[in-house]
Image (tube, rainbow over all chains, first blue to last red; front, top):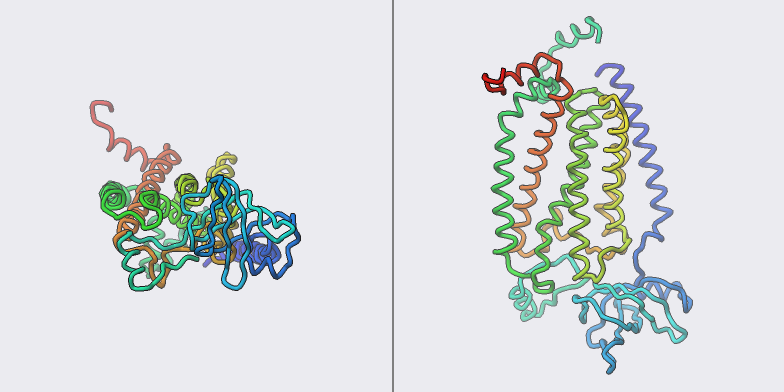
Length: 147
Length: 267
């Protein structure tokens, strides 16, 4: 390698190292802001004040979905295992919304600690399979695991 | 280049065949002739694989247990998203070689990669958005995966813009290559965003340890992924050959090429 090329290589190497270090530091300090949603356990930990907007993510607890008689509002429990939060939502739910499914709800807690959602999004996981395979898995007692 | 350095260059023995090959690729007439032989084959393989992959994916593969038929958009979305990242890495790699060794064909190939990569990024974002609406319930969210992929599109547009903004194509290519190299920091962020942070976008279905896609649905995806790689190679080489002819319009090798390709009655 000629001296000119070596010099260019060193210059570019230094630029890239600098950019790399700067962005690593930036990402470490921004970590918290990059979380798109928080789980029920995380909410319990920080003692979220009522009225503060945030996104709640977790699984819809099986058996907890309760559709009101007016056909618009829905109550369900979002859980991540150790902690759970009751959610109330008025509006149409996405197609993928079902018990056991991952969801992300935007809204705030009310005074009673119930989460009043203004938007509910369904999260889907990385598994893809034909219906027959899913049925067969269910029969053997293996539940298709949602995130 | 002064005559002394030119002499020194030719005298030095080059034993490594890879280094020899890269040096030969650096010669425009050799590059033009060498690529001309196989570029039609790249287009042919791309066409066959795409037709086969789409047939398997859109018709033969079974519906998904949860999403039904809509999941088939995966056969466009996932290969496009993979390509958007792979092309960026290759563009930056070729830009790196261009910056240090000043090889003109590398500059040309790095710059011609940008519009192809930008197109794949746009396809990934658009198909993802169309897929998100019926499944997640929204066209767009500002989660880490979607946002970092959007940043990738802006990086491509930045590289294209910087290249076009300067008059001298060789200097412009090197400036844009440096931007491409700096933008590499975004790639691990795109890839690991679904692991590092909570995102609406799900985690990777395919990793080094295996696939979470049923084999009956996986094969069409892999075929499409390979087809897109052939598309990139074919498109890049076709573009680069044209750029070489444009830049070397007054050189003797270009005149030979044009004369060979022109029917006699026109000459």
